[in-house]
Image 1: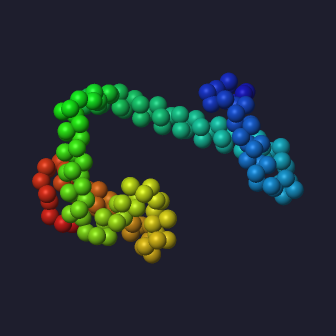
Image 2 (image 1 turned 180 degrees about the vertical axis):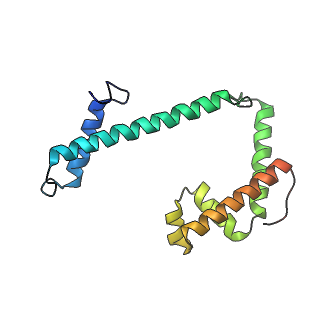
Image 3 (image 1 turned 90 degrees about the vertical axis):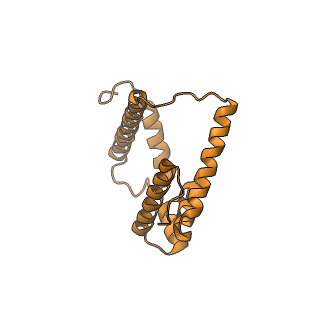
Length: 153
């Protein structure tokens, strides 16, 4: 509390989390200075939470500053129809992707797999996966912005 104040984030929560993680490590006999270890873990937890809070604040500020940001979209027949059209357009654009890129996009964005998990499944390197997904996303964005069905990339 001397170093970070009373919160948020709550220093007592960080201490509790540090103790819980220390117990989970099952490393009591392996750590030479458990007190210092717990202090370091607590400090790191506080710093991580403060970083995350900063990211959330900056994101909220950018969203609030963006002039074209729609805060709440009313559910109207027109909005439902527009959403369905956007979904249909996205499906068409995804269908235009080469098979490998389409498969990578589905694994990453739909199935929620990490690049490491995709690499294990496909045998590709994470760097190659990143490049292919980036190219696919650029193609999808350009296709959707143009409102046309673009050429295969």
